[in-house]
Length: 204
Image (cartoon, rainbow, N blue to C red; front, side, top):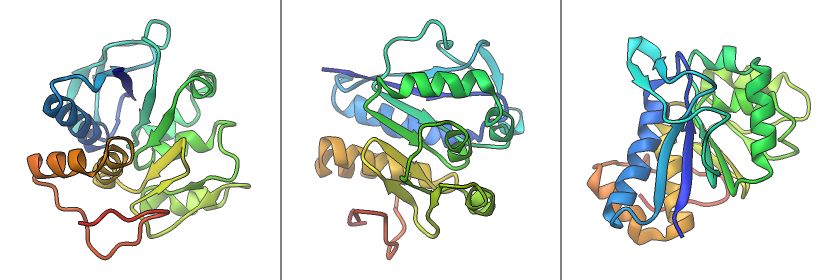
């Protein structure tokens, strides 16, 4: 059965934080005759958005009209500092979390997650420039010097390009190394070597 994969987007989102995962999932879907996913963007209440460095784009759905979600991706960027204080977003995430299979954060998307009531003792990581901010918060299990963490339902990645590594890892976890290898080859992505990932390491 096809999965619904949603990426939450907002003004001043980091471009690669959402475009990288979008590319990984869309290429995987294309390589499997578009039978794996329906992939779309969700914003709070406006379709026309402006990412970092003035990239203009549009979302597909809003909080009040989107399909059921299986996998939800929360990217970071300068705008995450605003979004982490967005009460409507935080409530939507907490409500959505009960019904989804997996939640992935990219870069400072974990700053947003850290302001919800979702986390218990899961290992999380983020962009190096936000590590200290998250470490100041009580009851957060913040991990340094990893590309991503895997807690089962919740997965997080470090800064920007590491979101591609996380999504490739997720493909391997859910669909096997063959698809992982095919997507990695298609996008000509070379994952960093010699890095110890949390819980599991995929050969480069």
